[in-house]
Length: 200
Image (cartoon, rainbow, N blue to C red; front, side, top):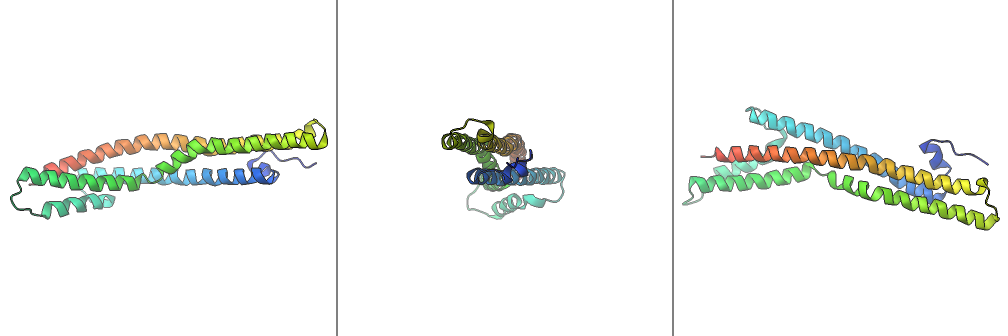
């Protein structure tokens, strides 16, 4: 009997077909999770630096959609519009552009939430399937020895480990990045209000 090496790749190679499918899905989810986390960190840094530059009077950088909305609104002249009404209109345009900008910047957060919540359950499916395979092996061989039970149990535990490996980083990334994007959204809101209040 071939023994599966105690490594993620070895456990995958020696797993049953259904367990392999579950592990492959969870492995893809884990890799995609790290891609989204790394991308989210770069987005946070880029937008935060752009905000710091703009508040210091520098280049707008990635914030150009918000600046463009402000310029378009401020250059549009409406008849009988007071200065206060114009500032409100510019503020509304900038807020709309800022919301769209942040939704685009936070693009990976919903996926992280799905992986964090669904990953353990997909792993649990693999766990249940592995245990079912063990009981099926017992029924077919009429033998309860460890050699009969072990492969199914190993598949079950490996699927559980893969599920946790995908879900834990996703949950941490979602919570930490969600808070960071919340802080960034607040800073962006203050910048928008400051800009709109300066419109003559």
